[in-house]
Amino acid sequence: MSKLLLVTSSLFGDQSKSSQLAGEFVQAWHRSHPGTTVVERALTAESIPHLSLGALGALMTPAEQRSTEQHATVAFADRLIEELEAADTIVLAVPMYNFSIPSTLKAWIDHVARAGRTFRYTAAGPEGLLKGKKVFVITGRGGVYTGDSPAKVFDFQEPYLRSVLGFLGLTDVSFVHVEGLKVSPEAAEQGVARARDAIAAHARASAA
Ligand SMILES: Cc1cc2nc3c(=O)[nH]c(=O)nc-3n(C[C@H](O)[C@H](O)[C@H](O)COP(=O)(O)O)c2cc1C
Image 1 (cartoon, rainbow, N blue to C red):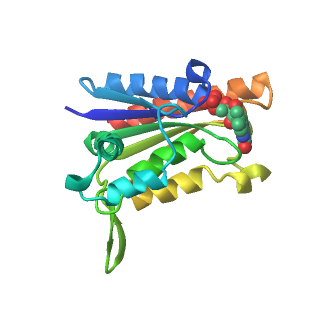
Image 2 (tube, rainbow, N blue to C red; image 1 turned 120 degrees about the vertical axis):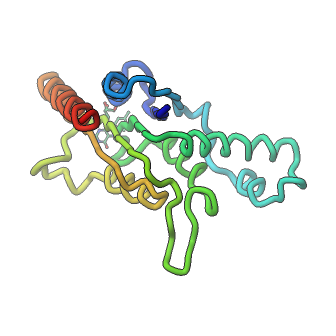
C-alpha cells in the first residue's frame, strides 16, 4: 500500500492557501491512488523546535550513554525521518515568507538532514539516501515570481527547496505555485484557478 506524507507549514492553519490546495492535491491523489495512507505533519513553532546545540550533542552521544532527555530529543528527530523514509509520495505545503520558506520548515529540514541516514559523504561527493520518491511542493505566494515576472530573481523558495531536497536524494520534485494571493482579489482567484488546473494535470498524469 502506498504512503503519502503531507507536511504543512503556514501560520494560518485552515485559512492557508498552500495548505488548502495541498489538501485538494491529496484528495485528487487519493482518487487516482485508492488505498493510499496519508500521514500529516503540521509544522508550528510549538510542534518543532529549532535545532539546538543540545540536540546535536544528543545525536553525537552514543545511544547507551544518552540521558533520558537526550533519548527523547533523538527519538523526535528519528520519528520525522521515519515519516519521510516510509512515504512513497511527499507533499509539502509551503507559504513564501520573506522570499523563502517558513522558519519552521527550515527547522524540520535541519532535523531530517542527517549524515549517514538521509545523505552520506562518499569519495565521489555527497549522496542523497531518500531515493525513488515523488515530491510535490504546493507554494502560497503573495506576489508573482513565475513567467516573465521581474520578481523572479527574488524567488529563493523553489531554488532552495530543489537544492536541499536533491541533496537528500529527492530529485523527482514538481512545484505547483499558488501566486498573486496579495496582489488583488482577481489575481488571487486566477492564481488559485491556475493551481487547481496544475493539480488536476498532475492527478491525470500520475493515474495514466
Ligand atoms: C511573514 C510573512 C512574510 C511574507 N513574505 C512574502 C514574500 O516575501 N513574498 C510574497 O510574495 N509574499 C509574502 N507573504 C505573503 C504570503 O506568501 C501569502 O500570504 C501566502 O498566502 C502565504 O501562504 P498561505 O496562504 O499558505 O499561508 C508573506 C506573508 C507573511 C505572513
